[in-house]
Length: 469
Image 1 (cartoon, one colour):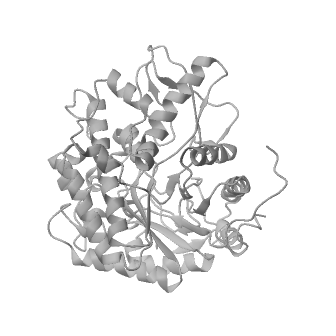
Image 2 (cartoon, rainbow, N blue to C red; image 1 turned 90 degrees about the vertical axis):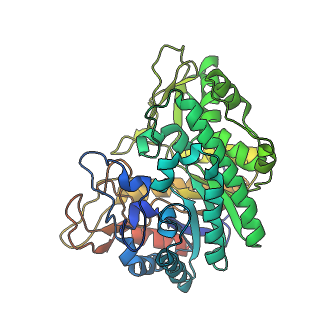
């Protein structure tokens, strides 16, 4: 609908940005940190290792000061499991505890609310060797990790996120280096058993958070992209419903309502992949009760019907995929694409928000949204990223329209606060408001530079989203 009666964003709107530990910190196997699956994986050819990244570990005070200069109200970062528990369980690394305590205190010094993600793609390698999330024990291992975080940081952290992009871990784990399918005869059985244990762990952790930290707020952080049908053909609409259920609603139906989505359940039946569910599991699921939905959004997806003659394929977080007889990815001719091939769909952002709010009626917090690009540092120390400003402006405009339509939006944390190592393309795919002066294999001086988007976002925050020019 056309909107002429606009509402302003809430005064307490959480403006900020996001990072993740394995992509930004560096110091990967030092200061007591153990290896995660990210530390042992083979990185894509032509991209740098993850041992230095943006070296946030040694630059966090400088970086948080720059975030404060932008006016951040919140900073979303993840805590590396193996920096706290080098082997995933057992002995605690006090140096890791102290590091994140210092990061939290540095945020609070500038009145920036820490928004902590507990698990962002970096499962401890020692747990991976034991069988990772396929083991029932993984539930208690994650709950124990969360308990340690709540005990050490619960007095200062009010906002928590459980598992980053659990749907991506399930649908694209082999692509992002988080899932080993070697020797697995039925990948669906393994992946959805892993998923079941993650869902149980998440529900237990949400309940534990409410018990240990009264007044704290906690939620999931899946990657949600509304799925369009490729045409008005009825079967294309069925295909879109199928992929919406598999990609989106499975995870949120369980997080919010504690029940499996019926279309996904049928999909699992067809693939002999119903997870082993023990007595009491569904009672645990029903006790999760998130306070809000955190979600990552980059673009929508479009699919058409598939008559079971297309080979199954998985893509990256936003790339094409196919399930024979269920759906097949379709390139949307109505959308522009980024330099890295991801479709750009601001209107779809609002459509996604609308659909989520109508289904779940919980406050929503954007935990990732951004544009990866080949940013260039000029000789006079400038980075002119008008393309990023344009991208973010169009998405914030859609947030404002959604709020005018009655959607409860808590905040906006685009990806990313500073340049970091992208999962697939390395440092050259830059997302940040802050430029880190390094190349793929030449670390240079690691100096920080403010991009044009830095100054633009500062103005946006100062005006609470009123001035997007």
